[in-house]
Length: 313
Image (cartoon, rainbow, N blue to C red; front, side):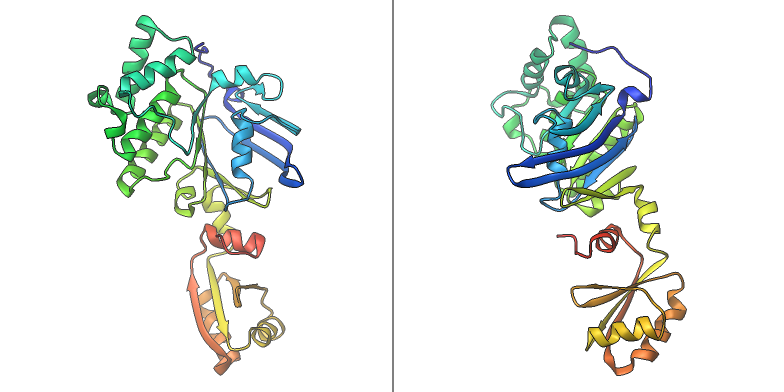
């Protein structure tokens, strides 16, 4: 069933409240609170085992909510899962295309799941093929398509029933750089049309392109904001010091220079507003005990390290 368009902001907002989920003794989610607005490209960023895939499965109604509450497009996932499925489009990490069928035939199979047929199917199929720039490929067998074109067919299938929310699990997996650029242009167009786009990723450079992101670690949401605002929390620059004796160097930086340091993989990291004046002071105080001093602008990996004390692996 094709749902009527809804211009209200709340209808396309995702809300998670105190969401917990367990697999036996393993607690995959530990009290996640999250809101995602209409027309926003939102990335769930985290290493393997962070909980982002479990949250994706809950949002897409693939697994039931155990504790807490989730609303998708104005509906409670726990009590209205079938209705939620009518308001979301999903692109999984693993391809869902029948590779022996043509592009047109794959879309027709998807249409049957939503009760689309006849003239309505023909018109809507033409629309999504044009939107995904696949019109001239509609008769081709899918196994002959490139990875980027296959991903576009997946998106066309997901858009067929006019979803209010599009969920994508690691969407750029297997795509070459040019195909990734095309993918993000498509996602931006979807967001501009008012579709809420939510994707999981473990790629830092991909998360940088999102309007907003949540960083997940060991089942918890540890940071939430725009890429710029999260980086800005670390100041203008980040100084990394390698020393012969990290313990001694850390004591000097703290006791003599009054600096807050963080130890990561044997190196000392210092947030700095004025690195140009601070680096000479560090070098002077440490003298021959320093091996190297590097300065860089904070990135999302630095945000992850600052929040967790671990590198993003």
